[in-house]
Amino acid sequence: MKKKIFIIDDDLIYRMIVAKTIKSIDESILIFECDNGKEGLENLQNLEINSNFEITILLDINMPVLDGWGFLEELRNSTLYDDTKFSIYLVSSSTDKSDMLKSEEHDLLKGFFSKPLRRTDIYNILK
Image (cartoon, rainbow, N blue to C red; front, side, top):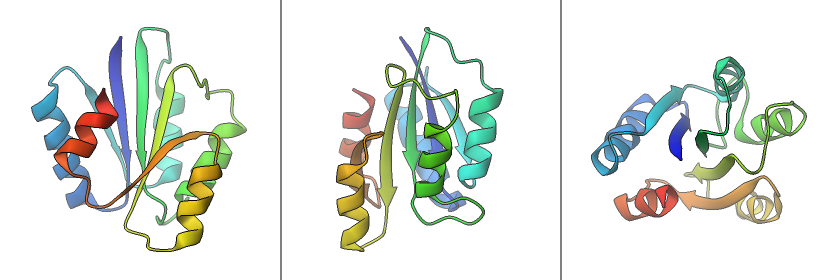
């Protein structure tokens, strides 16, 4: 199954580093970089979601316009979400324990990673 990865984060440098690392692991992955949750949702809506693609989302918590938690709620309430096609990981520099606890309890999330993502983290996400 082909993969599409959405890197939703307001830090341009971080997105570029993660995208470059992903491409060095697997050049066939299509990468979408989004500056905030609203842009991520818009790009997902414009994407033709079909059974040939698995979508992985690397989602920051703290972003302008629409943060990570808002993105998850908007996605849950949309017709886009299909748990057989989506794998969503929270990736944050937040040290707030409530964010980590909330991420463990959130049913749309597959996991939580602290920034910066290491190559081994990305490799494990892509498996």
